[in-house]
Image (cartoon, rainbow, N blue to C red; front, side):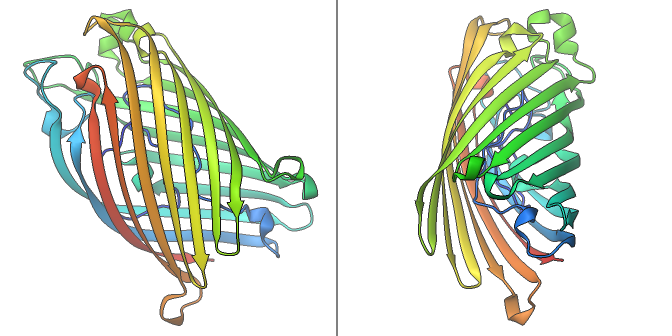
Length: 338
């Protein structure tokens, strides 16, 4: 799965259980308690623009495409340490139709939750159902670098592009209850999958299906706590890349006056379905991820601006060392709401 990878600081509004591609993508769990555009009092244009930067330091898996591990001497090499700095941005523009409660928005970003990933387009269409909740559809196209054949040793590995097309459906405040459900379908395609051509069990073309359930544990005047559970099914042409994934997460938000602090803790497991041809055993992975985000609104009296500082740490542990990684990230940015 994509595992945390570089450090960046710009920050975009979403910290999510990650995915850098290496295998199939996974449905992201929500990491903070948000409101939809339908909650706005007035219709019309809305949006957010944010610019910042940051960095990361970590041990990247040998599966991750990067200069530090372009050439490996064996499949048992240790993961490579690397420190990176990145400028980042996040822009969202949308329109709310006040009469119907319908909104359309477009989001383009590079952010901490999807480091080294270019999100070409994130289109959302939502509809308020009044007391029955809010329904939203989302389409996302993202692309990032992967190795043509991750398992080559003794020579420089070449990169190619992996593209993911995702269709999502979410239903917030289900039937008036403080519960949200989400479903996603992702199609994954690697442009030049040399590994898959060499061995069909390594093929990375496939589909990922996922579902999430989020529910409240506590709502107070300044504190709120949410919990979530998720399931993903990765169905790939290469049987060694197919998996069943399970995740749980806990989200906390503290808000007082002009500032807020949002945190998320996630733990997950992926159980793969067949013996990996390169290692002679079936792959199993567990991972955890913690992120926190501090937001200060209207700094120095500028009402529409905000300052945001983010940090995260995560680790993937596997029964095959080739896939293990860990990363720490920190970043900051200045944003504007309109």
